[in-house]
Image (tube, rainbow, N blue to C red; front, side, top):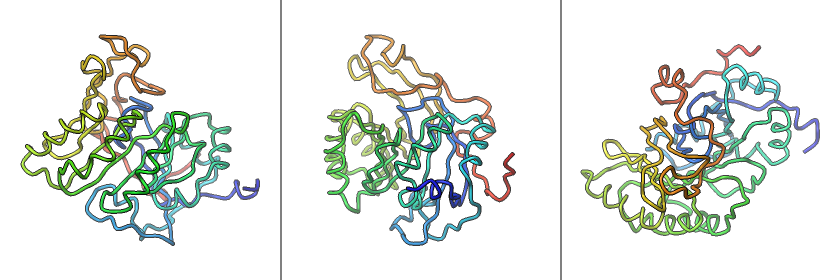
Length: 288
């Protein structure tokens, strides 16, 4: 990308501020605050209607404002963000490795990208991967198989209608072998019993599994060695982190937590947001 290209403004549909935990980033920037920038696309659409996350992939999102890199820097400073994540269809179309390098030189903080299909964004610090199990399973499985520890930090979000173990098994097995946390979203909890059984079975394959479903969520992290709880959460909120430099407080095993910001979420933000994302129309934000 040329220098002139890098200086172009980014098209933005909406701007958000949230905890890392609110976007199901449980093992990276724990207790931190994220600036969320949603980029639209005029060229793609995704068969995604029923999950809350589908809102950021809405093909009808318009460009409401354009931001220079200096504008992003000012937003980070104003909101004391610990990291940035680029989301929406436009993220995979516009955000590339050279842009990430340029932004990191300017801001010196972690930069992440939310994707819905494999992407070669190796300069990102972290990736949140949304996979809808109804579509393109082979691509995602191959992406996980090829994942290496030197790549950007990865947390996998899996979406399906029902708690059917066989649907999640292939992903949980591979992710478990590589210590990739997985987050499961379900539309139907089937009365809770099947959800609890799913959680139990998947935890045998991957100790870092979390369930995001009304009434039956599982948000606690347990040590993979001694099984003691090391992180307590509510949905979107880190309540307490019981680690000593990423090591279990009980058995001292090193656990997959990177760039810990705090042992609990920002309390001022939680009072305002309740653990949700605070979304803003970018046209209403004055950037100084």
